Length: 301
Image 1 (tube, rainbow, N blue to C red):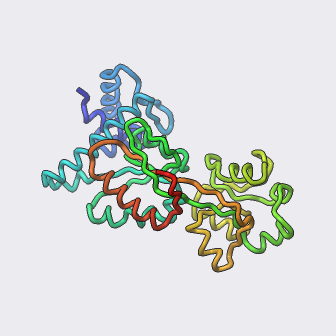
Image 2 (cartoon, one colour):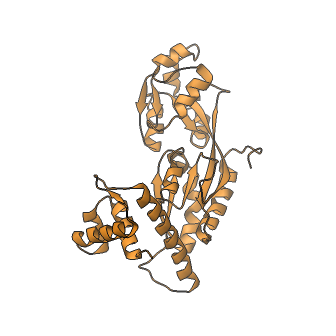
């Protein structure tokens, strides 16, 4: 039988990034935290923490964290059903989401749900092609991801497509694309990309212009708001989701530089297969807003 006080210590050490900060959260000494982790490692017979800065969980540690997170979610639901009002133990729902969804449709989909149930939301923001790893590692109970294939012990539900338009300011187009958009002009014009993890720009240029990685110039700006602002400031051209791009196109602030060449990215909601009402309620709310906000491919079930 696992000691859940020790599991909680492991969870806080990883979430806080170290033993000293975990000790402050748990209101115990750093030595006591280390002792709990050591006893848990002795119990399972494997190392659970990689003592780097910040500390990281080993593969076994991640499996234990996933188990503990699931137990926490179920226990919080049980407290509600038993009318055990303990404000010191609020329901915390950890969700991994991509920056473009967070900047547009995601929070409006969940705000009323979290206010009504008085749950606390903890968001982890990462590229949509990586968020399912956070679910697998137990760092999130659900995620918005591009991965259709459900992870073991999880369900995957189609939400809709985010459609990306290649845009730039009128002044930028006049400078770099006065005649046409071609492989040659794209090699000279600076692009704005989100991060090294984000492969969307690379896939776009490969699909439509047969360009190889590294054959263009780019600014890396890992912030959804600053990314869009950089394009509006004329630093470069870039791929912007339709929810953000369309109002700016209507105002004439941006122009679509490659009409007819758009990139659709399907989004899915993956969550653990545990009987917790939180994930069911969250999915229903996400599905309603996603149906109104995202594009839909009726052939995807």
